[in-house]
Amino acid sequence: MARIHAENADFALNSVQLEDELNSVDLNIQRDVPEVTAFADTAKAHVAGKYGWGYELAGSADFDDAQGDATIFAALANAT
Image (cartoon, one colour):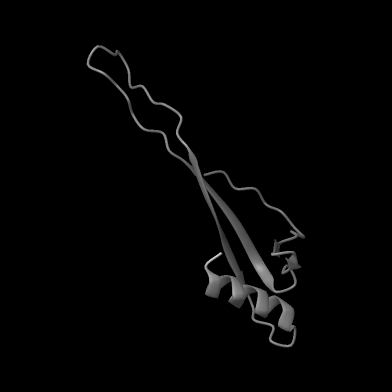
């Protein structure tokens, strides 16, 4: 997987800016590439599949700033 280094990323959840509470944001993108090789093929054949993606976030809890924590815990409780 390719990696791109970035600084000063803006990250929002439900329109609430969370970048002041985060120290790492990773966006992971996976693409299904199933093999469809048949008996008469001379080499392996693949078809493009659908993409899957997800975020990995790391940071410190800032309980003085209730808006960020309230947004995160509400999203977890509602499974959004």
